[in-house]
Length: 239
Length: 239
Image (cartoon, rainbow over the protein chains, first blue to last red):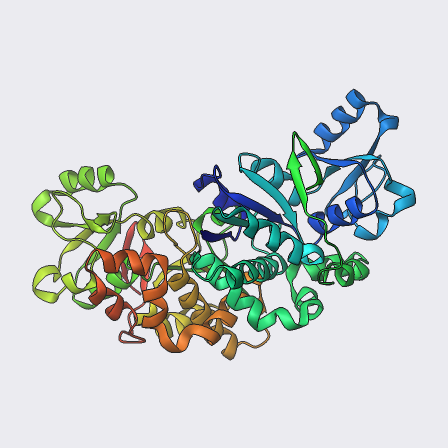
């Protein structure tokens, strides 16, 4: 078993995803929000790489049958029902709904990672469950940090370090890539105070400036969910 | 002043280099070798992104007037004079020569970084000198890790962490990007035993398997040179 970490989505173009069990990480906030949405009882989530694709799909499926959600520059998209804050995705709002979701980083990375043999979704909120799920496959594991606009994001790397460390603990014979080794090392050093690390990160600072401090607090909670979202037949559902 | 680190060359496509003072890092081995070559008295180094370009340029300049050097898959290129080991670049071999150099990672990254306002070359061997040079500009600083075949390399990140930390020490008001913060953190944790870290890295392991352990030892030496190579008018020369 190899445990590999992709630090920025641009590395994806050099990698063969077939045969790998993959987790996409976008802690602030897409993957944290997806876990929250599934826990609030939504039926499924269709990740859409662009706003246009989400809008077109909403017309095809019937606007009344879907909930359009996502963000651009951190804020709700014009004409959409919800933004990208995990706190918006409560049971009264999303139960039994199909969500069409388009975010700047997370959903486009998920779309690019479709060739993976197994494609799951991870944040701190469900890290323990995802680590157990990935380890159960016995295959090579790839953790993809979504980052921000093609650049590296600290919070995603910390989550990758937690996941890689958990899988490695149970599989000490696994081979760690340079990226995985660095992520594990980073999490050991900075993982004790996640919220502090988020607040100092570039993306965290930006979200706070938009008024989303509560989202940072939510996303820094460890293992509040046992849900492992997986991508199947074009939709994200509970595994 | 901002201090930013590019973890993999693929991030380069999302970045405006104009106005920045840049250092390209390819510890194993291109940038370490360039410093060694300039210290051994070579006249200049012309980085060539491809073998074909190096060969064509050798014909144009006159094969007898240049030294062709570089590697593919770690070994000397067929028909070239030298490989990419810093130990080959001694005074009797390269003094007053123009080197045409093509390596898998380092020289192609240098070619892509040409739009930078100032473009310098760094390894551990000249880290202190480069940090001083970069800080003297007072501009935004970008450290580019060359990596290996588009993927992240631990040894380049460690060198970026050393450089970022040195500049930051003298400029505590500087803003660190997430990548720079992580690099500084990583160097603090693993910088005490560079050779050990190199040996455990993916690229280091590969080079050892080819018989280049001595190159790892050479590249792990700190501040053995005061040379700051810079890219000017298509050539790398001492600043």
